[in-house]
Amino acid sequence: MDIQRYALIGAIAVLSWMLLTEWVIFKDKATEQQAVMTPAFAPSESVSLDNSSSDIPTIIEASNESSLGLSKAANQGLINVTTDTLVVTIDLQGGDIVYAGLRDYLAKIDDPSNPFVLLEQNARRIYLAQSGLIGPDGIDSKARAQYRSEEASYVLEDNQDTLSVKLYHTASAGLSVVKEFIFSRGTHLIDVNYQLSNSDVESKTVYLFGQLKRDSSADPSSENSGMGLAPFLGAATSNADDRFKKFNFNDMLEEPYKAQTQGSWIAMIQHYFLSAWIPNPDKIHTYTTRVTKDGFNIAGFLSPATVVAPGATATTSAQLYVGPKDQYTLEKISPFLELSVDYGWLWWIAQPLFWLLTKIHGLVGNWGVAIILLTVLIKGAFFKLSAASYRSMANMRRVQPKMADIREQYADDKQKQSQAMMELYKKEKINPMGGCLPILVQMPVFIALYWTLMESVELRHAPFALWINDLSVMDPYFVLPILMGASMWFMQKLNPPPPDPMQAKLMQWLPIVFTFFFLWFPAGLVLYWVVNNLLSMTQQYIITKQIENSAPQR
Image 1 (cartoon, rainbow, N blue to C red):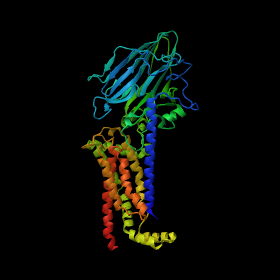
Image 2: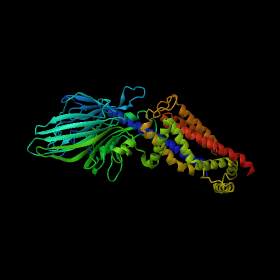
Image 3: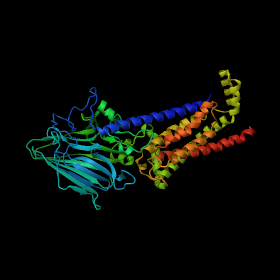
Image 4: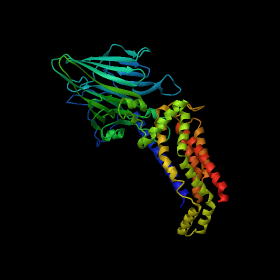
């Protein structure tokens, strides 16, 4: 049984996976760049799209006569809101949020004056948070409502904990609407309230909707994420059958989603950040995804009817989150919203790893040091398994001369060669699979830790030491990838060499190939691999020397 051959096959499989992943990322980025240049596209006629020319959902024969695009012909102004966490621009036409910058997250680490922009409406990207009232008496049914505001700008002062921004609209049929945005200190969650007053002699019926409208442009928060698994970009929601259901833009195009559920949410997700509508959890709402004729991706909700009796008032509301994928904050906002921090199918391992990482960071105050200590703890947990693997490989290395003699003696009889090998393993008390099985057991933990480091917004712009001032981007001087490759080369020297000369040459190239791939990995991930390799190399070296030194006495 040729263990080295299986190891080589495994390594080639890993490399093939990485190449395929990078090709998919390249193809997706090319598509996204084309979408940026041409936001409106003409999809195949075989795909069913939203037939409306408007971005606003239709209901009860509402006539949608206008569309929301880039035109500002009917707009009478924008208002600006500044809090300790957000910089927001609200369009008085519709009362939509057309810009949201995150003051506590920078666009670039070396430019403290510019916040990271999540929502925007310009030639680069269309990404808006829209809400309104539709239905028989909805003020947004025929055209977006035109609001007025008492101020052009609002600021959350140091002595304020909340900031109320009120927009006013009066319909011709006697329905007066106050759309109120409430911003709170220290949070990215916005309360959106509608206060409805009916001065008419007939009841008024409206339906609240909220939606996130986005083009198919690239994810600006993953531009520097490097090689590896591509972060998800698209919509997500939760329902009774699926705690976390996500749709990329192709899914939304090919198969629009529609479901009614209670206590849920709907979001647009990208690397590190998201926007999400959270309607009243006590009511059943309709959640949908769709793609408009002009190519905009829309994910939103529609609330049940709000009926305002003659001479009466009523309220309806929802919440909007615009901020980072901080899972401990998100889990307090709505059930399962924290799953937008997508660890994949190994979330049940990744969640405890992240919890442990945050606890370590709370003690040491440095995310790089926290990664190092977490790696040490993981290696300690698998110490015995790793030791068994290294002992097996060391014993295989020790009997290499005897294995070479058997191959030479039975070069023309593979069956006798296999029998002689098995007798040798039995005599020397060697399990040929002993070096592989412990590693396979540890692989899910290593993959889960990969996703933990990849998805954690806490590592974005987090400094480590010396030249590494951002663990979420690649090492600018490639020191960590080179150290990783060197450690991999030294570890290779401790393993038994493949008997086949061609295999041996291929194995010699693996450290170089892996170093090349790791050049573009985020520094936090490479730091983990370097520490893991150094610990593994030390343990393997000690065990190998112990077995080699004890060989003459056996």
